[in-house]
Length: 259
Image (cartoon, rainbow, N blue to C red; front, side, top):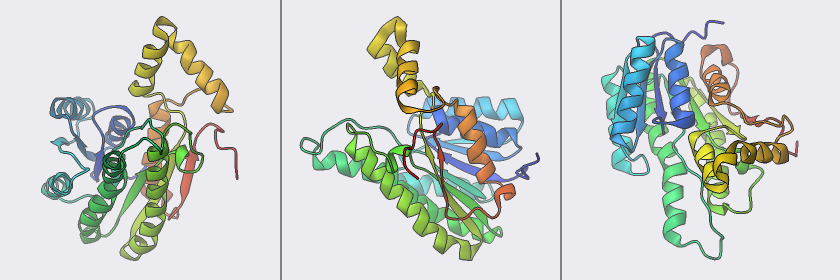
């Protein structure tokens, strides 16, 4: 299937590794130019260079902290130099580990800025570029935890739930400008972070640790690959998904236990 993405400009945050890198790579595979952003300069520049060389597209890296207004401005300005964004994927984020009783205000604020305010600022700034080009698509990468929380990460659960609601509110506003907004709620995705955590917990037996997690939480009894999730995300951002507006999609292998 031709996703009709050749020549489009896709902006992906948190793109130096894991899900963000996989999404950027999949856009490039479909012929889109990509703007990758992350905080670590060496990592994001290496990711962009590899993707550009592999697929022969323009792949630009911007080292910025999108939890800040200045970091978001740098991404918006970089997208403008590429001719303006057609697609925006708000992916920057990280898990947490705390209790409500013990977590300080500063930790709550830092996650709010990273998961929510980055999406607010970037969607607001990139929307003008999309509208000038006739429209576009935005995708919020929330989490299964936005609707089915895990007890040990209340800050992550809460801010991802806020991102889910933001995506819904934004979609109503942006469709008037011919910009589609949707949200994806991934379940267990086999990222480097999951693998590193399993190694820390179980050493050489880390693969068995991941399988136990999958057996407990996912009806499909396995983790998804980054590529499986990326294929779904890129399709949602393509003209092939043109009637998908304001929806939340659970890509979770049966992890969600409600309807």
